[in-house]
Length: 504
Ligand SMILES: O=P(O)(O)OC[C@H]1O[C@H](OP(=O)(O)OP(=O)(O)O)[C@H](O)[C@@H]1O
Ligand SMILES: NC(=O)CC[C@H](N)C(=O)O
Ligand SMILES: [Mg+2]
View (cartoon, rainbow, N blue to C red):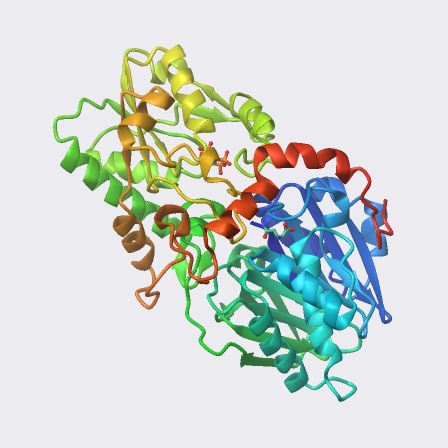
């Protein structure tokens, strides 16, 4: 899951984009980038690392201009090389720079046709660079110069027809303006904000509403699935629906894990959704474990805390913060390799022994994906003296790969793939394990916006909303991105060129 941001302002935007990216850091910890536009030239700084490490004062000084876009990356296609950090740039037509959150499901096919039909070369293995070239190729077809808003919308319309998968996009076109659009299923989030500074209107788009809050923009609305937003450099806003059959299918995993609780996505408060997940799971525990002997409810920080508190309330049991989180260790799930993820759990969390000693504890996590966290946490609870250790997951069993921007490419890496609850329970060493039902999860999120009729739930259900994902594609994805394949790729990465990078 990456984070994207774009601002058309009237004063320098470098600091606001930096601040917004910092607030979106939880969506990608691997790389960060900002492109600003000054006097018809793009200024770029991107590199691997956290926002605070990538942008030093000297880079910020060079990122001049009152328009810009930014990106924090969690790689889900291509490699982790700095050359695949975003935004990407093409010089023709006009000069375009683009940042993308999501994953394309037909990247290989369109890369081939891009070359055959348009002689466009893509210099990395990133699907986002392909997407940029598709957009560029379509903008090139417009007859008029300068481009009208209609030309922009026609290009996005064509992009929707060519590209499949998940994509929330922000792009800047030299001499024109900022374009933002969301795929026809609205799988990845994108929202629009506005503010007035000294009587001048400024616009911002961002993956999550928290980014708008952080830099003082008022939330206007979510960008609709399939819709494109065009803001020219005079701050004129144009919007149009560019998809033939748009239908909102937001990724339910955003609500389970990815997004910040203080964000609203498609009108749903992420925090309220998590509280509701806790309430529904609490009810299930009461129903199915009616004679339970739980003494205390303990969250596995950080994402599960809101659900865990509500489970404790529903069960009428005390809630205790039995694990302390080291605030200097990031999210483990979005770290790039299993070795690093495993190592980080114990560095990140430590038990307060008194909360475990001689107690039957119910640990709560938002989700169990590879089982890396739960296995070690249960061990730690026992080492701290717990008598019995139960585990509850606020999401159902994650059984299927994700193809839309979450790095779960291989079913075999998922602990619940092909296993029933008892077996998983044994593997992680718990005395009891309970998962949320998918219907309850859906109801918990839909409670915040009953207009959402369907969610993208593939990791739980195996149903992929874009309709183009079959076993052959999943096998192909696994061959590209499983742990083993990534390990092989690391060597090749070293040979990657870092083009367009001013700021090393
Ligand atoms: O079963 P696994 O493969 O371990 O993945 C699931 C775990 O990873 C995430 O935590 P993470 O440390 O990434 O972030 P958090 O601090 O936001 O909970 C998530 O909240 C679960 O705890
Ligand atoms: N998680 C994402 O949104 C990643 C975007 C893009 N597929 C990349 O790997 O850079
Ligand atoms: Mg966690």
